Image (cartoon, rainbow, N blue to C red):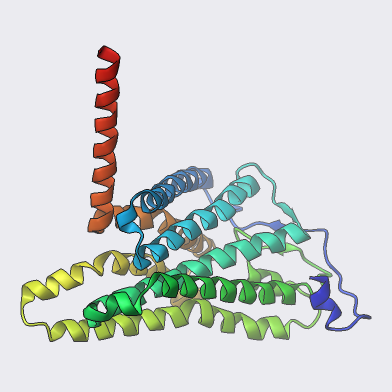
Amino acid sequence: MDFFNSALGRNITFVHPAYFRITGFTGIQNIKYYYVFLFFVYIVSVLGNTAVMALILLDHTLKTPKYIAVFSLAFVDMLGNSALVPKVLDIFLFNHPYIPYNNCLTFLFFCYACFSMQALNLVALSYDRLIAVIHPLHYHVKVTHRFMLSLITFFWVFVITVCLIAVGLLTRLSFCKSVVVNSFFCDHGQIFRLACNDNTPNFVISPMLIFLILWLPLVFILFSYSFIAFALSKVATFQERMRAFKTCTGHLSLVTIFFIPLLITFTMGSKINPNARIINLSLTMVFPPMLNPIIYVLQTQEIKESLKKIIKIRKQSKIMTFLKCRS
């Protein structure tokens, strides 16, 4: 970030603390049970998303544009929870609340980047469903492997750029008083509010970033499903409508579990107890990555068929090995 600061002026000196102290879960009763729950969520999330990625890589029938976005979502879910949960457990369960300044900014970058990519991957999947329902005959022309890879790559470049800007603006702040961050991770909003110099750029850009990486994706997804609902209303029979709608249920479930908790937390704002708000936000960040692979396995026919096929092959392989050993 030295280049970022040098662009602001060579003679400017910023007071950076040696560390930040994370205190988000401090003082909450029986919180150790919650840490056990977080550990369980993390293990299930890693195993589930790894299984989904392995299925997509092993089964050639799943190498379609749609499953490029599903693979990306599973990868981001696993990476995001791996960046967040082990560090949270280290901070609070093993009582290491002090995080060096540079490590804290790195922690912030990865958490926000992965969380943002979760939202944008849902946008990619909503576009896939939109074209599949509205233009089924042109789907393979409009949604190609190249298009989906380009879209996911663009989202990654966009998210990395946005998060680097957020982190870069933090490096131009001086911290002369408190270094206590009242959150469960190195939260951007909590950190820039601790600054003792002008934090106006951070204060202005923060809602802009939230709009770009959270609310704008939600608006696009809502518009997509409005068009899908309108298109389905023109389908002749009820059975055809239900058949088309079933292809969207998995994605709709992902959107619901990702955005609804955020909407509740942000709209209620100060009405929520600070401790309850911290727990709600932590659940919002760690719970969807655990549920996403479960939802896709249970609600997506292609995934279920692929899983059955791999299990069948494994069983046949074991039987053949057993018969060879007996002979």
